[in-house]
Length: 402
Image (cartoon, rainbow, N blue to C red; front, side, top):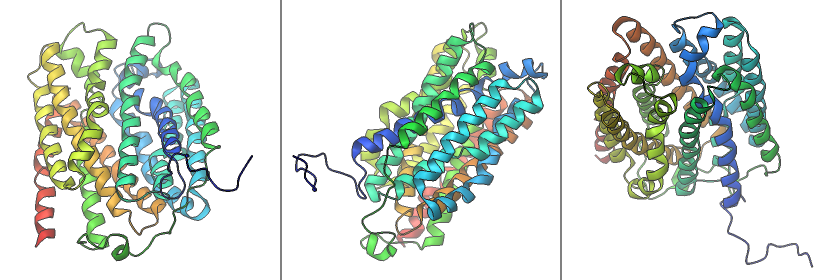
């Protein structure tokens, strides 16, 4: 017999009515959306020769084209999500990705492919849409765990996609694989349509009542610090991405494409293995973890230079993976704290703008230094940036404690 109230044996729901299985469903949708968006760009140097760029010189610039337009659209989509509903805008993002992937796979010229990447960026924006959806229902440690899970979904895509793309390349070119990938966000949209519109038990409250025991540096100052950390961390890690496959080919001549893809994915595999433990260990000291993350990123990137064998290169990637895990998890904790008492769509829209800005800067710098100094130079730039940034989270924590 049906009852109006939930049975006592039902799995506990998160704040706002999102059950754990629903959060996991959102993570699964984020994974499939990230699969092509994050997994195919490392193969731009293989795609572009068939589109009229025989040496792949435009790879660095095209790597950031979706990022640029995602950054430009993120604040707009975030505000619209707060106004018209987070679920509706999340569905829009998934459908936008499906259309843009289809156009990219059908493109037969460099301008047409570039236009598809522009649309991918502007019509996508699943990062802000997904995080805004979750932040409308969750807060505090629950939200930071969910954000860590979303990063895990993206890392899982970065582990699986480059390997799968490399393995399928002998039968289906990376360019035409965009056509297959277009089905993934379409399937995600179908699943998301079954999920509820998220609402919190109490919509944004004053920060003092949401976290009375935690000293606050002030809303603007806390957000500025979060945005600065996000920009610096994204720049330091992303700057090595566009030419990494080319660097692997140079350092380890004759390496199999599948193994090269695995090396690219290795830091993200580290995240999948370690993120949960890191979240528990650094939940109450995220700035310390972020500083340590920057330091390990610097050490890992520095190790790429002298690595001329598969074991040495793999070790450098593992060290980088440790830094990536610490940084991303601790940034999620800081973002969850900053989201208290704020409209989540707008905040995460601006956070995506800042994050994409770091990625854009990384792509431009990678292209310039690669042209001037070769494929080994982007990892040196990332090393320097991470070393400079490592001290700032601790300095900011020291200022807050006074």
